[in-house]
Length: 258
Image (cartoon, rainbow, N blue to C red):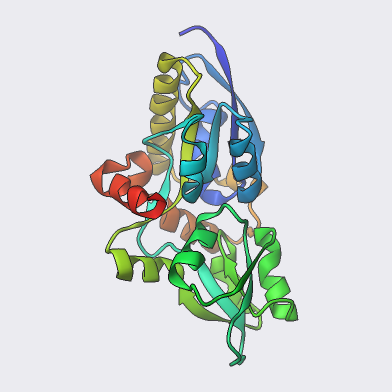
């Protein structure tokens, strides 16, 4: 394939940077593809996908129905699994009903889960994911939904767990939870999309085989720099479903987005 530049957008979180490191930092054959990458918060990624801004992009799985006309779902790169859900938290010791919460974006899978699993929560206010824990701790909201690294460190604040939305999802559906997906524009040449698929899978395989090779790159973008937090984050969100969705993975996506 001739050299081609692909505009790529992913999150700066450890699961994405771990998976994409090898293809972005010259560790594997990219089949002539050159990637220009932007790092965006998940709701910024969702908004960019709605505008079809990037050739290849991370997005919330819950957004897929809204963008399916312009993007196709890739088989590799998803954040999907068990025990990996967003966490609904509140200030420690509070007993009043939770009516007003902060969520990490209107189009996020976290928000979709709240709507589906906690219909009695009346107000959901979008907020940058990294600001939610502090806002709940201040008392700005009755509760908040934590994603990414925030789910691993909330106990260091004056916060307590109300519900693990992933476990609730699994209890109701018996399926793994599909959080994030990788999509490619439908107007890209078929051969280019196929090459992106191969390169991304090769990058993830390299990451599994050389787990420490990406550590400096991962840390350069992470919110939390503690190695134990980074390793827990990667272990939770990068798994066999990241290599290929498989039948069960696609069933889970259909259940969430149907």
